[in-house]
Image (cartoon, rainbow, N blue to C red):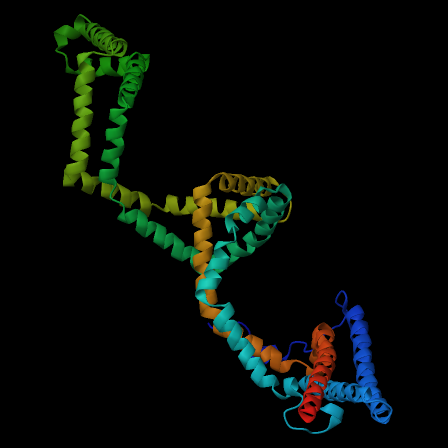
Length: 438
């Protein structure tokens, strides 16, 4: 993509100008005044020339006046012709090389576009100018404003329902789901689990887990229903003679008492030998998780079974449906919760960006790189666009616009032409007389 605006589209744009810019009326009046004054000067020099020629027999001094006035008239006429020839044909006559601007409209348009492309949109000056702009600070200040962040949050909320609908109808949701599932399937959980457990043990958090396990086992053993179940199991294994002496009850009580005493001893002593054995057991499990292929295969199988369960897909659909409903309610204004949190998030992002100079520098560098590349790709399109626009302009109105803005200065060329021409004529006349006298 190298053309910003199609040439045919450019031709349909308005090709007229308005002269209601500040000061245009005043400049037009001043131009008329200066034009009239320049014309009066030209007429004055012509009248002075005729008068001086008539009075030449009266006194030789009028020869100098006539020479000055004659040359001033010629200079004024020549410069009047030059100024008029830029814009139109003098006196409407088809004189060659007049009406220069309108006769060369297409060439001027092409050269103007080329000049802007080559000199204004060159990579080095464009990059230098872009580096002077602090894009990140502007963004930070913009986001820190509460009203702007609220407006941005409201705008984002208006777009979200359409984005959700587009995601569902375009097949993007199915693609995302498949990609997520594929990525989850590719994760090797065994090293991840080993690393997590190793950090867990290093921080000593497994000892708290051991205390919780011992407490839970203690509470389970001391429950009447648990003791009754264990007693029944022991009674079924005892000889008939021992059953008569109710040995099952004695054994259950001894087992529970010994177990609870052991559990309490371990829980109250942080340096109990059993804790060291538990450390070794957990570390051994961590090592096997990280190195034993059979453990990795078991974990991978559990992962696949979990991801394949229909309950997980149903849970994902339920979460998505609830999220869509919540977004729609927020977009309709029924709920302000999401808008409030979005606005707060934007403001916090602005605050964070304003306080992070390194991040702002990275953002600015990114903007420079993107815009520099964009301008480099589009500058030929800019050249064509400018050229097409200039070709489509109404030259009559354009000439009026140019004349209003620079015509006053061009009219002063006529004054200068009369003055310089008159001085040149006076000098030549004086030199001529000196040569004759000599």
